[in-house]
Image (cartoon, rainbow over all chains, first blue to last red; front, top):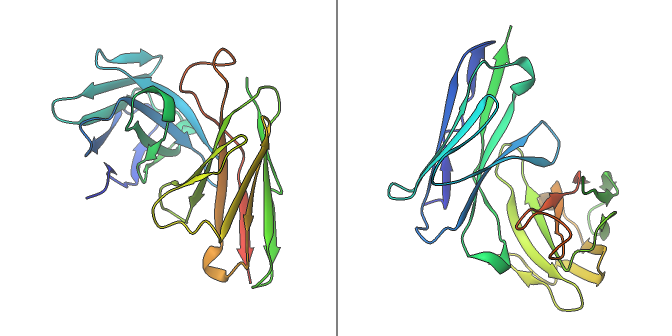
Length: 112
Length: 119
């Protein structure tokens, strides 16, 4: 079983739509959780960290359910510029080592 | 924001040659740098963790004699792909973890990546 699993998509949505991505992780000891965005042939860029209390940054809302080992990302009012691959990332160990485990990513295509 | 550079951005080489990729943190110091590899439509896979002044820690399945890592200073780590073969063709990305106090905790800053094509 993969350590981090995501639906690969692609998700094809019109501008203005709301889209949700899901992610599950296998290691219950995972400590930190993130969503990264990766554009084609570019490096990943941190979109937001994910906390148990949930957090929101503009049109983006992230949720973490530790009991279910499940992470979500909600994008409201999709823009063309949101088209990218969204990577679910976990850190398996507390502090120190900071090893990042990446999911394979979910591709989003927003069309006019 | 923190900037990490990689050089070269792309390289094409013949099978059997060695290729060195540099990763530099330009405006901060990093005792720890990470090297990842990404095949098309696949996730980034951590290859090794590079610690300044000590030997790198390799992930399971990554040959340390094939992928030589040197982290000689707090701002530079190099990855050398020795005797490269076509199956080594991939996107290699480094990331740097700032020293405590030089950036948000646990934030890794990624380089732009190096695309390697071995013919």
